[in-house]
Amino acid sequence: MNYRQFGRTDLRVSEIGFGAWGIAGPAMAGDIPIGWGKVDDTESKSALRAAFDQGVNFYDTADFYGFGHSEKLLGEVFGNRPDVIIASKVGQRLGADDSIQIDYSRAHILQACEDSLRRLKRDQIEFYQLHVARMQHLESGECITAMQDLQQAGKIRYWGISLNTFAPEPEGTFFMDHQLGHGFQLVLNLINQKAIGLMRAAAQQGYGIIARMPFQFGLLTGKLTRATTFERDDHRMFRLTPDVLQVSLDTLEPIWDAYRQKYQMTPLQLALRFILSFPEISTVIPGIKTVAQAQLNTSPGPLLSPEDHEWLQSLYASDFEALLKQMQGKG
Ligand SMILES: NC(=O)c1ccc[n+]([C@@H]2O[C@H](COP(=O)([O-])OP(=O)(O)OC[C@H]3O[C@@H](n4cnc5c(N)ncnc54)[C@H](OP(=O)(O)O)[C@@H]3O)[C@@H](O)[C@H]2O)c1
Image 1 (cartoon, protein in one colour):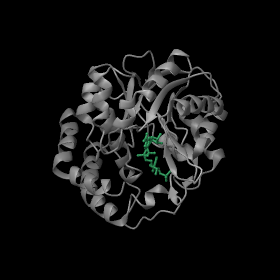
Image 2 (cartoon, helix red, strand yellow; image 1 turned 45 degrees about the vertical axis):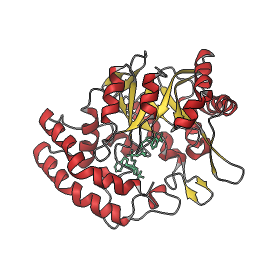
Image 3 (tube, helix red, strand yellow; image 1 turned 135 degrees about the vertical axis):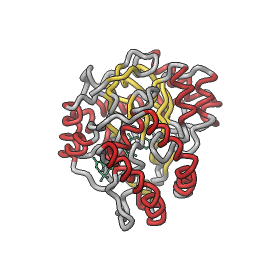
Image 4 (spheres, protein in one colour; image 1 turned 60 degrees about the vertical axis):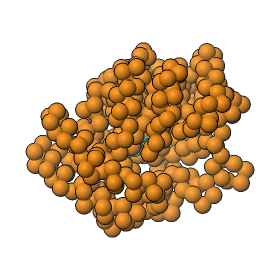
């Protein structure tokens, strides 16, 4: 495992981290699936340990994942270990009517942080993120002072924002203009390259960068087919619909074939290596649910030549931007 500096902080993070949304289980907000279907907690805990054994020291979670279940598993496996870095998030909760409530009030943030610390069995969260806060929340200032006060109180070490999947701006620039926080979580993968400009500017200013969704919900691992369907408790049932799978695979398959021939690399390795080839990225956080995934997802395979990395970036304008628009329509 290689390690990279997390921006201007003193955190040294594994370049591959652990995306811990999937292990949260099949949570529902009313009729809306906000999880990935059924999981086996024993296997999830083994996966967390297996990733640690592979050198992973960075674990991304949120209080909303399984309404605390993901944090609880992390707490049971790692507790207060100082050699584990936990990144959690705040800002969403389940309302009394089972609807998703966006809450960036000071009172909620302070209480949610205490609750996360209890579940995680930790004294401090190393990186605490506003879970996709938008301009109206940032401009009110309440969530920003709450995060600063939590840092001052030692409850969190550093903080930042997890940016929107399809619209990382203007919140990214707002953070940079006001020199807020220490890091960004953004989507960067072969298909969604929208945040590259923002990522470069942010890294230049000393922000740590977490790249999420490296596999675009599994699509970029190469395991999904045009006929794949998902259970009702899996959020991909409304995102990776047959039309999206069809167009995506028509575009991706020739690229996978070319890189398989040239580098003997799998689609999964290409997905990871594409992201790791950006020096601005501090860590990429693939979703991991099993021991086998912990092993595969920490093996990104051969390095890409700079020319091939650039060519993959050029595909955004020619092929992937249109596909991303289609995905955006699904939420
Ligand atoms: N707004 C936010 O802040 C936000 C939003 C999204 C994600 N995140 C973070 O980013 C992390 C990663 O994103 P993600 O989980 O959405 O998506 P992802 O990592 O792009 O994809 C996860 C999917 O890839 C599949 N997969 C993983 N390893 C595999 C392997 N070795 N072989 C075949 N398939 C494999 C999983 O399949 P199975 O389902 O079959 O296991 C799962 O469906 C999350 O866990 C979370 O920590 C944050």
